[in-house]
Length: 211
Ligand code: C5P
Image (cartoon, rainbow, N blue to C red; front, side, top):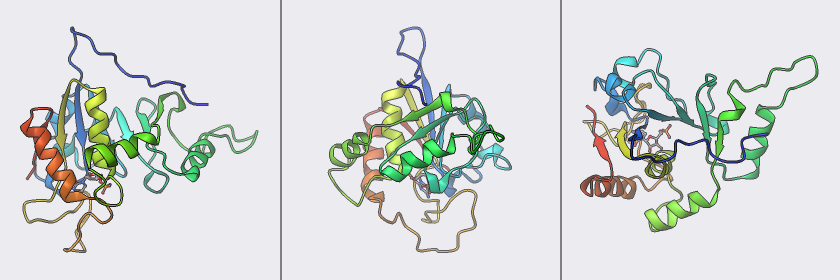
């Protein structure tokens, strides 16, 4: 039903694959990063990540979108759906979302291009948790998984929308902050942030801290 292998641009000395990994942090608000994000060949967003109404700060382009059943959003026909499946239900949901309901209704329930679906081996989550985060916290955040994935897919990685805002809040750019004590829940946010800073020091990626 889905492509058997990933549809990725192969490495080449003639072309630098530039990627923007865009998290959902409130530090994007007021950043004016939109044009800079859109300048990248590959722009990866995750979960809800609306662009409409936030174009100046987050841009308009989305080549890849990471989502789960609970955070799904309709994609356009040119955007890759990146799926970190970690339980049987996730795969069942994915299949049913692309299966026509009955012969009269031939449209899939889920508006996305099934030829652009990319399903990660669940072993990848295990790898990131064990190797990159040394088993800290319950499980890696979507953003951190995406960031490590991008290091495999791209030659240059620029990271936006990660971490707290200038007031120390872990909020979303598209939501009013209701819970000021909101942190990173099950995710080892502190360790992920330390790993991100280390990668930046080693010049493996560039981190744009936002506003
Ligand atoms: O909240 P959500 O999971 O949709 O955000 C996507 C990713 O963006 C998170 O997994 C996290 O890595 C990153 N994020 C962040 N700081 C925030 C909000 C999100 O680093 N304040």
